[in-house]
Length: 448
Image 1 (cartoon, rainbow, N blue to C red):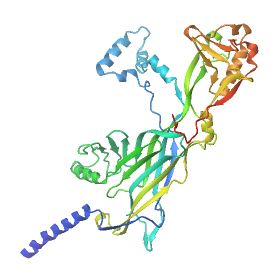
Image 2 (image 1 turned 30 degrees about the horizontal axis):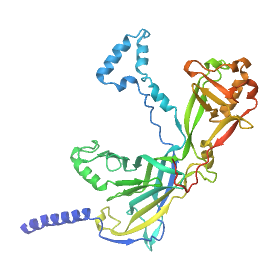
Image 3 (image 1 turned 135 degrees about the horizontal axis):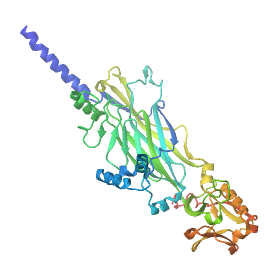
């Protein structure tokens, strides 16, 4: 009886030690194979416009104040004479603060040489692949390392910036230390991986299990790094125990094209609410500096090429257990390209962005806009804008052409052949498309 008691604890201790070793080991044996017999993963890529954030001034004004400031704001608002009932006060408190004049002027600038796109890369293991006779890819296999590359298809545009990188497992604000994990690890745990993990998880499991869950999370977390150059961006994901890198990865990219600045003219409302032509004295005008891309006749558009270098962990023995310490592993290293190129802008889209319209006659005499002490070419963003403005000009009386248009500081006039534009001259004018031909693509003057 005593002998039995003495042996039983020994068996327990031995089994405990063996299990601990299996958990901490990454594999039982491992070999490399740099040439997989088949492509083991496939890569697909799509792009969409990134979600728009709320405008800076869209939030109610009161929310931007401290508690004391909110109380003072309400006290002042109550004393306003035009507030006759409680609903008026609520409507006022819901409004944002008015925009700063200088900020509105800065916001009038337009940059058509910069585009922002959300790129989504989907990585999937290829189904029904036999790596050797009676040795198929199974659920025990995983993508252990992944290096995703986005590369420019031409040298007249460049990768300028990326804002946010997201995977199925982590979210990283690039350039910052903090990042977040999803709830896909265990239970309802959504920890924040910033520095030490201890104490950062939501209570989605029993408190007594919290430390063990977080310990498992440390071993399963994915290290993400990357580099960005004007020519290409690279995102590297290093997996961990029981963590397959199959899934989606997205990044918001800023792409910059070379170009020049053109001052485009934007008119106010040409027709009032009653369908009547706006009086010349009431017609406003804006000068909008617009950055327009260079045009390349032989371009195929703004295109990115996507590829993935991967390390595939194949288990030939030990696949029946979830513990990886008893696995006989072969590591396959391969490269795969996306099935299709990522076309961010088509050739016609590039042409549309690089085009503006100059108002002139058939001999090349340009109509000018004289505004204060400055003079600008009458350049418009589209032919439709000229058609509408042409109809407005033809609706005026001849004597209205001899006066300046607009009021006060916004007074302006149209000049043609050194004098104020006459109505008889309007019929000889047209909107002519203009483009700015870029420098040779193999020059050093790229995307400036």
